[in-house]
Amino acid sequence: MQSVSIHFYRLNFFQYQLNMATKRCFVVMGFGIKTDLATGRKLNLDKSYQALIKPVVELKGYICVRADEIKHTGAIEIPMYQELLSADLVIADLSTANSNAFYELGVRHALRPRTTILMSEELMAYPFDINHISIKKYTHLGESIDYFEVLRFQKELGDTIENVEQTKETDSPVYTFLPDLQAPEMKKMIDAAISNTNNGTKQTAPGEDNTKKTLSYMIAEAETALRKKQFNLAKGLFQTALSLSDDKKDPQFMVNDPYLVQRLALCTYKTKDPDYVTSLKNALELLQKIDLDRTNDPETVELAGSIEKHLYEENQGDEHINNAILLYQRGYFLLHNRHNGINLAYLLTLRATTDLDPTRDEKIADLIWANRIRRDVLELCKRDYAKMAAMQNQTQDPANPVGEEQETIVNEQKFWIAVNKAEAHFGLGNLEEYANAVEEANSLVHEDWMMESFTVQLGKLEGLLVGLKEVV
Image (tube, rainbow, N blue to C red; front, side, top):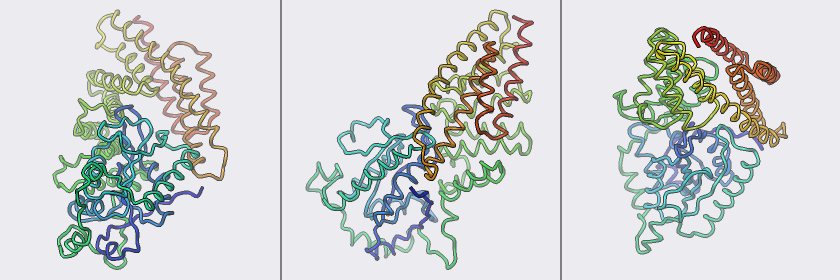
């Protein structure tokens, strides 16, 4: 399978309507990494789009565009509504129960009686009102999609597109249950749009690069900068992406996408600008704007927990330990995963060294709680390692780009499983098992910063345990 390059297309509503030989597909879905709040899993929707949808749609002769690939001035709603009305085909991925996707699907179903295809990740729970509609399901692995699942679903989607083109059957429940309803007369709608000179679109100047002003382009560039640890550049790009995703000029309103705000908060504290403490506080303030106190988004609470932990380490007050514990505890119970568990165990051990646990009994209680969590982390390591081993068995073709990417993800996860296991054993006093886990981590391909991060964390834990021996 050839790697899928990301193509960027600019919305030119008038030209593609006048040239009916060009078929157009509008994809309704979220973008970036989104949390499925029903399951607590993070799904990379860009992977779904780039691997499952776009190559199939383009192979069938359509121009394929998603909302974040539209270059526009003015309100994004204008070209979005134009697409929902005029696109020859609409594919709606409802994964993570994205409210915008559901709303846009409803608009499409109201405007067009046919040529709408629904899909979602297999674990999504469907609302009653759409559970009678055919929805194509695929399996997501979070950060990646299995190679064989890509092949299977691409064929299924391709066959579905062909069937939609050939049968001309009504797929909108609106027109199914209201058979006498008349769809908008397309020619009149197009003529009206052409006569409207103030419609929010903009013609392209000769030589202008259309891709560089799309939301998709900005996010891709920001993620690249973040991977390269160019935090100031990434911060600026995510700020621009937020401004593109919301037309309101007041920064307090520019928080409509949790993924973008989370990434901006991460870059903000990583820049250490103008100083580390200020950058941490600024990042926490950003997360407050996406309802930090009440959200069940594990990504948000996990990032906030990390920031609170760093604020304590920068001598900003013991209360930050309690704040971090509450956040990691929330993330641990939401996801029941290794990362939140091992951090929660560390923070409970840390609290036992402070006056936040004023009595010996309270210190012992936190240490017992921490060790219970460490034992749970060891069980989670076994579970996750089995998953990674199963994934690795499905990446046998080195010439396959999807397999290569999945292999990289598997190796990284195996490393983090090994160091989580090592820290859990160390905290429990199982030094032989700890040494074996460290040896395993060292044997896996990893970047230097990954081992450095583990070593620093373990050094902190060792210091806490040494100090606690004298107290309890």
